[in-house]
Image (cartoon, rainbow, N blue to C red):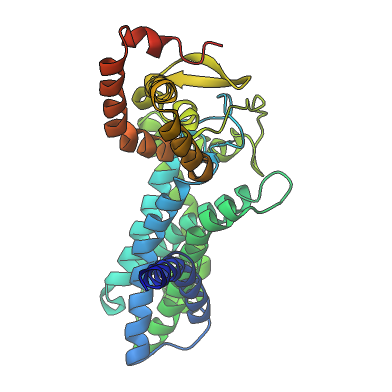
Length: 378
């Protein structure tokens, strides 16, 4: 009875996680794509559209951040840094990322202004500049999705998931432009201002026709982008940072650099933590050997292995049971540690066990630090 309940509970949790992290993003993407071309929703459908829009904007960054913790991409490792096993370098050069984030922030601001300010209170020129700002975001999203295709235009599941949120941002921006054009027509703006200057009059007439706004936004994007890049130069970013962010990388479609070949280390999960976590946190000490393979050693790894030695010497039956448990579940866990952030999380979670191991070692060994120090030396 209890076994059946436990199995049903496991299935329930599995389906719930699949629904939250797989089905919901796909449904939101399909909905955003459909609403780009369908007529304006009304009543309950309008409420559903607003909810879907909010979920996309809120959950998109959260899902992307969570998934990036368990992918093979090291977002803080530039092309010249040494990586291990199947890790890949960052698709955005770290020193140019402030430029990309600033441009994305301007695009997001343009979208929010056009989404939250009623059109009847908005001058046409403000709408055009907002569309130009969104075009910058669309351009970034398109280039990001191209970058993720890899050098051979192959798409891994990691790349598809990381490109899903930018793709949805493109859909939301396209829908917003469509809505603005149609809503302005429905307002039936009849007020005509007379200009003595014929050129200004022609420009005003052209802007009052919302069908011209997508083209006007494209024209406004160029000076807006130029002003933003000049401001970023004042804060130390290079003039070509927006381009170099994608080209001064390795492993990706637009990359122009060749990274050093990856080294391989044993996929014992604490070995993965020691080699893959951020150095300031996991504190790697030296290189060592495990079963003839090179490993990166930190104190946590040495303490765990010294504790295992003591178990093997004093309680071999318990050691065999624990060894079997680890061989069954430890290696699958190690395969999930695919980014420095995930390695950091495992390192922190292992800290209480590390302290327990250390206490046992100090109770059982005359020279505990000597035992810890000689781990993985041969």
